[in-house]
Length: 397
Image 1 (tube, rainbow, N blue to C red):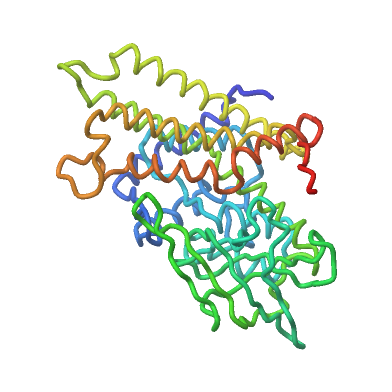
Image 2: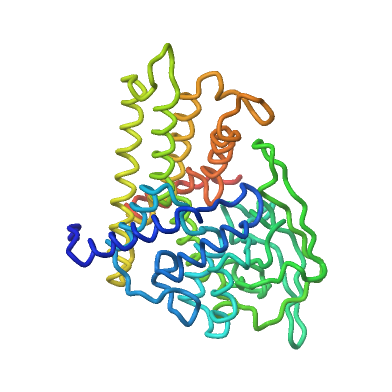
């Protein structure tokens, strides 16, 4: 991999800096629990139009249509962090479903769903986990019977992020009741306004309800809403899971978080000394910066493999585990830098940044479990990545 920037890339960087300087007044954020604000939607459209978001998605599907370029992707993340600008929207629809549809969806599905999803106008949730099917996802029991034109869904999903906000769900449903468990599943796109869907929020230790239970009672889904072949949903689901792990271990988010912590360490003082000048805290920060750099280099390795049409192999398998654990360690450093203020929560007048770090510390602990627990990730790395023997299974008497 050649990581040197040529003249063309330096021109690209200069243009991006000029763009960010010109639009600094349009920087926007989205609320922690709500849909993207109108300002964030406008920012997302502006980034797409100029090739700084959805850069390689074809124009026919609402993207910018550029050829893949690892260094351009790196420059975009570097300059957004430098400017303190919001990153493009990243969520289950944009980061997980869009690449799945690009790979496996029909042409009509790509044209109908990708453009509004990229713009942040269509919010998606993921209907995978069930009360009896978490780590062993193929044991799911949400089922479909059918008539001439529709699947009729009954069952339950749980830990469904953003279901209370979503317009659509990509969902795993058992459509072939007599097939082996990995072969009888289909991947369906479900309108969340369909009659028979009930969403019940689950309040977590963050004090908020990011997750939900979703119940299906005779929910009718057109048969045309299947992605891939009938009964081949496990194959499609694993394509989506690959992108989910990449989203949860995004090095851009880790680097942006580090910059926020550096600012925090420069502002917070103990006995008149900035925390950034404390050797213990500075050493801890540098160790985490080294981990973030390793995550960044690993991401570039994966981009190189993807550009060559190759599977990332072991490099792909470590992303979720490393990224989620790194984020939680970064949250922990920020909490410690805040000192006694780090123990505050919600309505205190002395709360920093609206309690951002306290909430992230709680939420990111959950992500070490969500999307595949750390223990499951380690088994995947060992067995699929390193070729080690499978974990022994207990013998039932």
